[in-house]
Image 1 (cartoon, rainbow, N blue to C red):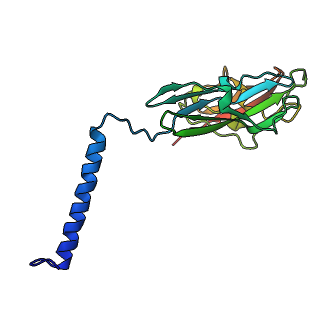
Image 2 (image 1 turned 60 degrees about the horizontal axis):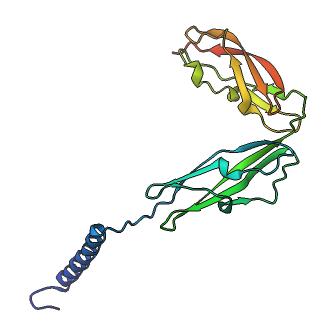
Image 3 (image 1 turned 120 degrees about the vertical axis):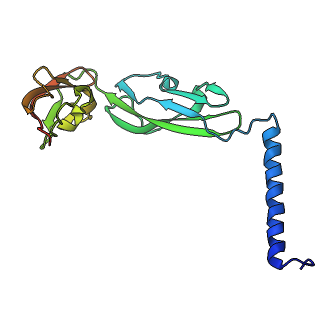
Length: 209
């Protein structure tokens, strides 16, 4: 024990000294011109929808990468890995079939995957569409552009069983969300080959409180 100081005071003094050294180190790092980048690049991606039989796909077009320090990072074929499970001749949805891995100049890496939907372009059968068992009510004065019409469908599949609910459009000519009542809304669902099916719904605009 140092003269005139308790062991507690000595420990406190040692901790203060340690913190001071760490602060000096951080200050020295901040004062240098060297950039300390520990953030991985940001990857923007888009799932692929391809006709069966498509070949020579440029997978780099489905990804882009940007880093906060390096700026835009070029995505090349060397960055891409394609799953052996992906069969571009057979219709189906292949989840996570194509992966990209990019790194910035500081060695920070980022990996992202996309799904690939392969469809039969020669299909001429309209999709099979079923309305939801319980249709959501629409709140009074709802902006129709914000309505998710997929929620009004229990299922929508093409001839090969591919989910095509994303390809739904609504005829809103009879719908008035400013007046509580029941309205007829016609939903059209298209498959990837362009075949269409329609379903007519009775949709209620609620009276609210």
